[in-house]
Each structure stands twice: as C-alpha cells, then as structure tokens.
Image (cartoon, rainbow, N blue to C red):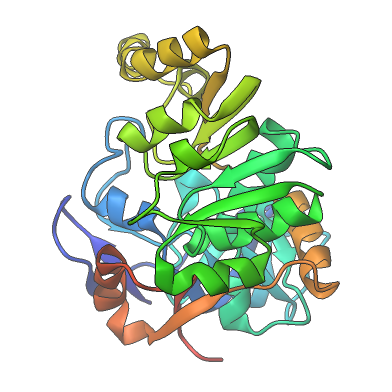
Length: 332
C-alpha cells in the first residue's frame, strides 16, 4: 500500500510501501479518496511534538480523510461497505496520507451529502477544533463577543461560521486581501493585522481563539472582559492537557512551566487561558455533517493537490496564502 511517511524528524515526507492496516473488531477499513493537510502534520514532521506525542518512526502522517468503507470489523454496527465517510482518526492512529486506513468506529461519521470528497476531507480537524473551542470549552452564547485570529485560514474560516451560528458577534484578523472573504464568512469586524492593532480596537470580549501564540496571545488576554477566556491551539500547552494526555510527572512539570507565564498574566487580568488539543469524535462530526447539509457551515478548500504531490503540498502550508484548507486527492 502506498503511503507518505517520515522515518526521521525534520526530513521531507517520502513515498514508500507500507503494510495493510490491521482492522480490529470495532474498526472500519476506509479507502482514502481525499486527505486534508494541516499545520499539525508539519509540526509533527519537524519534531515539535515529539515529547508529548511519542510517535514510533516510521510514521505515516495525515489527520483528515474522506473516503469509502471497504469492510468493517465484526463488532461494527454503524457502517457498512460502500458508505461515504469522513474522520479525524485518533491521535495514536493518524496516517491519512495513505491509500487505506483503519479508523475506530467511534471516530468515524457519514460525510455530509451536500459536499464533495475533497470538501469533506477539509473539515474534520478544523471543524472539531471549532466545535470543541466554541461549544465545549468556550460555551459561547448568543450575544457574546468572540475574536478569531487568522480568520482566512483552515481553522479560522470554520470557527467564524460556527460562532455566527451560535449568535456571537465575531471579530477576525486577516490580511487586507482576505478582508472581503472573511466578511462573507460572517465576521462582523475584520482587522487588518498588518496595519491595525487589534488591542487598540477591541475591548470587552468573552472569548479569543488564538492560533499564533507568543505576543499575539498576550495581547489577546488584554481585550477580554473580566471572566473572559483565551483558548490557544498552537500552545503553550497547560496542566490540564498534560493530565489528559497521561504524560509522566517530569513532562507534566515541564508543561506546567511552559504555560506558567501566560496563565499568571491571565490571572492578574481576571481572565483565563486554556490550551486546546482537539480530539477525535464521530458524534461531533455527525453534528457537523448536519450543519454542513443545512447550509450553516461551508467547507473552504483553497487548493487541491494530487496524492503524488503530497510532500510539496505539505511544504506549501509554510508559505501561507491558501484560503481555508489544502487537500490532496486520491480519486475514487
């Protein structure tokens, strides 16, 4: 089976033959027809998560897929051969840059019927991130104010739409060339991050979703109202993440130290900071499918690459400039 792997951190992706997936009792074997590209893939390739995500190398990368069920394990009840599905496999079972993958039944959902395989493959990681940030951790209510950084990106373009559906007033940062696009997605206020300082323009926000970290995250804390929350998806990880990931005590201490500065700053301001490392969920994907099919959410695919060009496609993420998501297609 063809797949794109890394055998050492920081080396380019390369194609090789790998063993066929092992299909457990509650697993579903899927023929991958399209796979989404994510910054997370690039960060793993560079070794940025090797302390907290101890993958065994060689590793097939890829966190999003859409495709067709080939067969199911004997205890699977929700899917059958021929079903068109999509998923973000569990963290310890990634590997969608391959011709086939076995996915746990609980992580899989029928893809939205209103969109193509490429569009469906663009959704799982970013839509689950949006759901878990806004609904679970953010508990966003109608009338609240939400700031979304990098509004034209893969995560931002979905978060804007979901926040508007939840009834929030949405501000987003973007480059001037994407201002109209981000407004069309539903942003009420669009801030040109190159020429405007969002800290000088915004105040009294209930929630910020930050994908940039560093100074941007520190400034984000200062636009929150008392009791407001900043959720970071690029770090730094916090103690709650270390606990949920089951890390050893030394790593838990190290992670606590990594986020101690930003958490201390948040406390002084009367606000809070939380890290989000999204998790797989077929149940949440079913809710997302319903939102897509009802027209509430629309996937944003900025570029489609052929599967043979997966290494170049992943490298293109670092250059930026792609609206929404990039996807590789394997065809039917």
